[in-house]
Amino acid sequence: MAIIEIEDIYYTYRDGTEALRGLSLYIGEGEKVALLGPNGAGKSTLLLHLNGINLPRKGKVSVMGREVNRKTEKWVRSQVGLVFQDPDDQVFSSTVWEDVAFGPRNMGLDRREIDRRVSAALEAVGMLEYSRRAPYHLSYGQKKRVAIAGVLAMRPRIIVLDEPMAFLDPRGKDALAGILNSLHGLGQTIVIATHDVDFAAEWADRVVIVKDGKTLAQGGPELLQEAGLMEEAQLRFPVVSKIFSQVPGLDLKPLPLTAGQAVDIIRKLICRKKPD
Ligand SMILES: Nc1ncnc2c1ncn2[C@@H]1O[C@H](COP(=O)(O)OP(=O)(O)OP(=O)(O)O)[C@@H](O)[C@H]1O
Ligand SMILES: [Mg+2]
Image: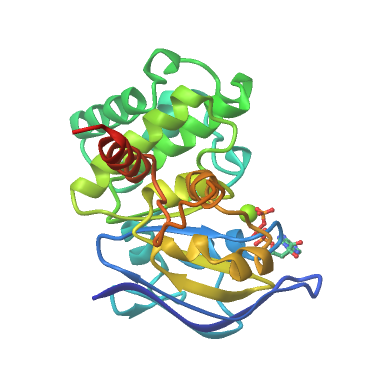
C-alpha cells in the first residue's frame, strides 16, 4: 500500500523559480527511501510538501490516502515528522530540552510522557547532557542532532529527514543509521534526502532520483549502478560497486552494492583459490 503518493506536482516559489515541474513518486508503507539528486534538483522543496508546509500549484500529494491541503495539514503533521535541512530553521527554543519538548507538548501529552519522550530522544542522538544549553550556542552538527531529537520525540508514523547526515561526525552518522534502523524495525516509514550514494546503497529499500524538479527514476538501490542514469543525475557509482567493476577479469553481474555483499564475494573468491 502507498503511504505517500505524489502525482504530477508543480511548485513555483514567489520569485518565479519553478522548483517542481511534474514530479511523481510513490512510497510504500514501512519502506526506507533515499531521495537523491544534484543541488537545486528540488529535493527539499519536495520534502516540504510531505507535511503540508508547501502545497502544490498543480497535482496532488496524498498521505495514507488523504490529500494534503489546508484542511488536512494539522492531521498530516501529526503523521509526518520532518527534519529540515537547516537546523536553524527548526531549533528555536531557549533550551535544548524545551526545544525537543515543543512537539510532544503541542500534541497535548501529559508531563511525565513528555519528559520520558524528550529524555529518550536526546539520549538517542547523544545530546542528553546538553539539555540545559541554549541551542543558539551549539555547533551546527549538535543543532542537527537536536532537530532530529525533536522529531523523534513526536514518534510520527512517517519520518522525513532532509540531509540528516550532513555535518554529523562519523560516530554521529553511525548512531543515526542505528536509530533509523531501529525505527524501521518498529514499522516506521523513513524518507531521507541525501547526497551520500554509499549510504543510500547500504540503507535504502528504494531510491528516487530527482533532477530539474522531476523524477528521473525510482526503484531498487541497484538503480545506483546504472551508469547512464548516474551520469544524467550528476551522481556517482557506490564505492563498493566501483571497486568491483574495476577488478580485471572479474566481470560480476550483478555488482555488489553493500559492504556485506562485497565481503561475501571476497569470501567465495578466497575459497575458490584454496588448493584442495
Ligand atoms: N525560498 C526559495 N525561493 C526561491 N527559490 C527557491 C527557494 N528555495 C529553493 N529555491 C529554488 O528551488 C530549486 C530547488 O531547490 P531545493 O532546495 O528544493 O533543491 P535541493 O534538491 O534540496 O538542493 P540541495 O541538494 O542543494 O539541498 C532551486 O532552483 C532553488 O534555487
Ligand atoms: Mg535540499
